[in-house]
Amino acid sequence: MYEWIKALHVISIIAWMAGLLYLPRLFVYHCDAPAGSDASERFKVMERRLLRAIMNPAMIAAYVFGIAMIVLTPEWLKQGWLHAKLLFVLLLTASHMMMARWRRDFAEDRNSRPQRFYRIANEVPTLLMIGIVIFVIVKPF
Image 1 (cartoon, rainbow, N blue to C red):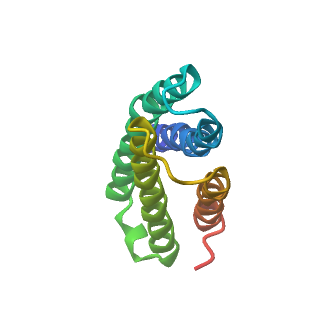
Image 2 (image 1 turned 60 degrees about the vertical axis):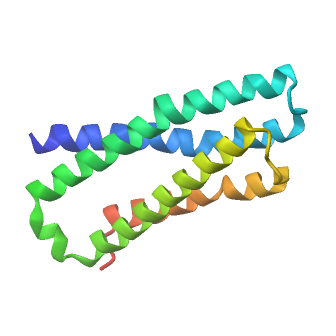
């Protein structure tokens, strides 16, 4: 059973990361679209669907399967690498929540941030993912 849970956890993470990497890119393009334009309205639909239909369910699934793996292997709770990984997962979740807020700003035509902001924000999930993978695979402590 553990291997199935781990596989579902990895699948969930892949879907979640895809959304975390794509949504800020949509924001970059959305910045160029005048409020109320057809392009702006199209971006609003794309952003909403990405967040609600892919990112939110994938994040929830990643948490559920991750917690299930910890329940099946409680000795991990004594290992430093897991604590570091969980910290990075919390930061990834915070990034997700900030993106949800930014999406709401775009949906209400209240975005005040420039493209450059979203280009930089687009790198945060990548850096966190690199840390998570290193903690899980290398287990440096």
